[in-house]
Amino acid sequence: MEILKTKQLMQQWSRARKNEGKTISFVPTMGYLHQGHISLLEKGRPLCDELVLSIFVNPSQFGPNEDLDAYPMDIENDLRLATAAGVTAVFLPQKEDIYPPHFQTSISLDSLPHHLCGMSRPVHFGGVATVVTKLFHIVMPDVAIFGKKDFQQLQIIRQMVRDLDFDIEIMGGEIVREKDGLAMSSRNAYLTSDLRESALSLSLSLHMARLAIAKGEKNPIVIEREINAFIQSFPQTRIEYISFCDPATLEPVRMIDKQILLALAVQVGKTRLIDNLLIDPPQ
Image 1: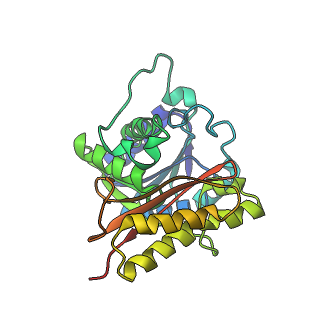
Image 2: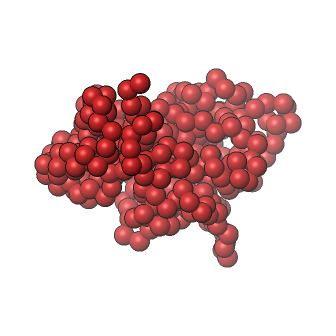
C-alpha cells in the first residue's frame, strides 16, 4: 500500500495506473475509520484493479462553532485498517495542498443542499461538493463509493456528477450499525454510555415509523408526532429535523403512497447525529 501525501504524487500514481489500463475504485473519507468505512472499501475492492482511500478532514464543510478542531483522528489505526481492507493507495494530503493560498472557487447546487442538514449547515454541502470535485480530479477514479448514512450527501454527489459530466460511477454503501442499532459514525466516539442510550432513539424511531407505515398509516404528520415525543423522552436530546421526503428530490411528502426517505438529525448532548431509512408502503 502506497501513502501519497501530495496531490502531485497522487495524480502521478493514478496516471501511471491508467496508462497501464487499470481501473480505480475510490472511497473518500475524513478518517477515524470504522466498520462503516471498511464496508465501503470492501464494496469497492472487487470493482476495479486498484482501491484508493483518501483521508482528509475538509475544513470547508465545517461551519462556525462546529467540531472541526475536535474531530477525532487516528491515522496509524486508519492505515492499519486500510492495509487489511486491501487498499492499494492512500491519499493523505495537507490542507494547504488542497486549498492553496488565494483559493477562491466553489461548487454549488441549486436545490438538494437546501433540505435536511443543509437547513442548519448552510456552508456544509458547498464544501463537500468542492472538495469531492477536487478529489475526483486528483484521484481520477472510475468508481466512487459513498455511504448511505449521509443520504443527502450521496444524492448531491450523484447530481453533481451528472450535471458536470464526470465519467465516474457513483455507488452507495448500506448503513452499517452497531449491535445495539446505532448507525456507525466517527462522531460516536464523543458519546458517553449515558448519551449512547439516548442516541439509540434515532434507530428506534426509524423502526417505529416503518412499523406504522406497514400497518397502513399514510399521514407523515401523525408518525412525526409520535417520533418527536419518543425522541424527546430520552435525556439530552434535541431534535433538529424529522423529515419524510422524496428520496430523489428530498422534498417533503404529504402522503406516504410510494417509497419515502425518513431522515433524522438529533443533537445528543453536544454530538450531532444523523440516521435515515428508505421505507416502502404496503402494496
